[in-house]
Image (tube, rainbow, N blue to C red; front, side):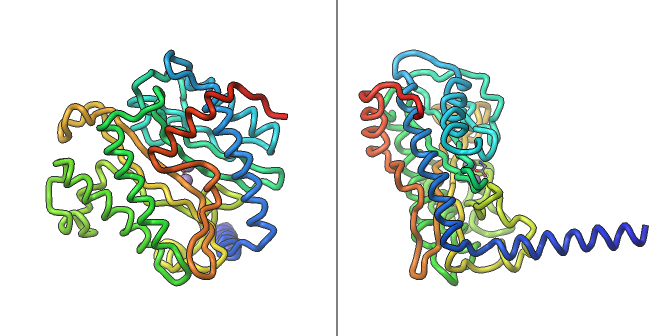
Length: 302
Ligand code: GLY
Ligand code: MN
Ligand code: MN
């Protein structure tokens, strides 16, 4: 067992060295990521064109339409597509995708094309199936949007990974307080021992992105989660809010709503570049985009 332990230990060391070596993406790698993201933008457009405003379709139709784009333009999807309509959007890794869209619901889609050289995109959009957000859906969406923007605005070389997290979570905590949901003050909620918002945010702000969707996961924590960002890192910024259908701590009208917005960000010399800017994020822009895509009609790759 001594030999086996030593072997496992050296495997871990190798994984760590490789992961830390992958933190900085060179120009060729960024081009691969951009190609995968550009194909994903087309895939989201295909989906918008196939999503009716006035009748249900299965979540797997959406998964399949995106999957066709991924297989045609890239290698495959980079991870199992998450397509959650209505209360399925509040389930964190909803990949069963065996529900249906419903006019009036929000539809959460977390999908990414893996390109020919196996670099993958990782993008989430949450859209109103009917074409327009209800005032309450819009309120939750705008809150997640402001949180994501605060995170993106924080990104530049030298900031701590956790600074981005805190920026995103503070906006969400403030918004939860405004909604009357947060059981303590915002400052108390932000205490790392308390994190009273976690019930509704469920996950961190994001992760490194590259050949693996959760890239560089074997890096030492002081190099990654407890470290600082460097020029050439690529990461996701993907805050969300999730209200479970049976959550008695929130007003009934919020229950069953899930929103996440996820973009792929390159750390530049001076700040952040949103590589997935080909898809709109602001609520009004999402509505316009959806109606433009629908007006253009269905499209096959090629
Ligand atoms: N699609 C997996 C993730 O967002 O981390
Ligand atoms: Mn992600
Ligand atoms: Mn994702």
